[in-house]
Structure formats: structure tokens, C-alpha cells
Length: 124
Image: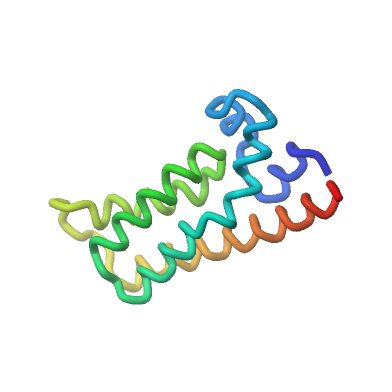
């Protein structure tokens, strides 16, 4: 499996990642670190307490990292949570709707984890 095939498997946008990082070697390096950096786990944990500040900060981090790596669906869902909990913004979503977004992020994240595991297995 090559890097483009990985991106197809995880439903990512390889061309976006390449536009941001500019070199395939950097895309490879950073996508392989994605599941090791803990930002998505931090967001999912924040969802358990529904702490506004923690949700904002964690969702903002997930949004940025995911967007840079071409994981646009995760970035979009995290962006919704970011705006929902941005200081000064009025809440529009119920806690249940936020939890549904978090569940979608978790599902997409699991897909990325599995894809990366398969990708790394083809490299060894």
C-alpha cells in the first residue's frame, strides 16, 4: 500500500495534505504520528465531562492537525465543536448533538487507526 492508497482507505484528502506539507515524506511522517499524539483521545475524554473550555481547546487542536493532514471529515466535525464551545459564542447544539459529533469523530478516528496499522504493516 502506498501513501495515496492509505488516504483512500481512511477517506482522507491526500492532495490537501500534500499542499500543506509540500513533501510526501512529511505527509508520511506526520500521518504516522497522528494516532500517537493523543489529541483525539483528549477530545473524546473532554466529551465525557462536557467541560466547555476543554472541549474548545481539544476540538481546536484536532481541527488544526486533522485539516493539515487532509483528514477533512474529522476536521469538519471538530470545527463544529470548536465553534460550539468558542468563548463568547452562544450554544446552538444540545449535549446529545455534541456527543453525536464526538461519536462520528471516534468512528472516523478508528478508521484512520486501522488504515495506518495496515499501511505500516506493508512497510515492514
